[in-house]
Amino acid sequence: MSDQSFALWVYLSQTPLLWLTVTLGAYVISDRISLATGRHPLCNPVLMSVILIALVLWATGTSYPVYFEGAKFVHFLLGPATVALAIPLYDNRRIVLRSLTPMVLALVAGSVTAIISAVAVAQLFGIPRSILVSLAPKSVTAPVAMGITETLGGDPALTAILVMLTGVIGSVMVTPLMNGLRMTDWRARGFAVGLASHGIGTARAFQVNSLAGTFASIAMGLNALVTALLLPFVLRLLVK
Image (spheres, rainbow, N blue to C red):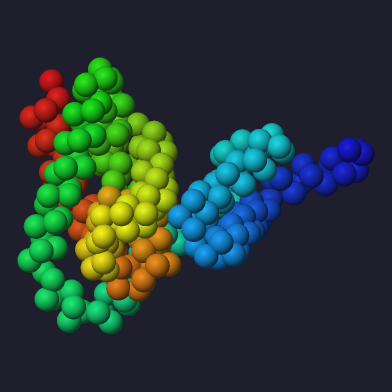
């Protein structure tokens, strides 16, 4: 690389617009690949975007803080995007109201199971308390999970990684798993993935069926609330 080209790269790499463009470009490419494969579960746009961006950062020797300075605008849009989920919820409000009782039962069962299973497995392998606390809210949307972890003395950065992994794994597994279980009710399918895999699972649900996406968004929001309330008590009971 010539001195002039190197100087240009140094300038561009410090420009927030570059990393915002890389982020959006990676997602557009990944989404096109996902669409070309008929939205195959393994061709998840979020997973492919993460891999593409990681390769770019590795190849250019760019640190994460430098990258995030440009990509944080996308992070900011998570808030409005979550609020926008109220639109399909309103459109399907009659169906939602008819399903209120089973949703409440599924919410409590799913939230408790997600917490206890994570804590129990972590204790079985002798994982330190700080990591255990970071793992416990893995099924909650990232901003809430990181806040819970910080309050309880865990590592929010580790929680963010675990939340991302949970969401990606859930969004990849949900379609073949539900098909294998012969679950055809889009309400149940959507609620399950939203509860277990938060925003990434909800995005996958909307790709498959709008009604499933609606119920996934409900589960994602309610699970964040229930987990925030239950987790301190569960940790107090199970963690010495």
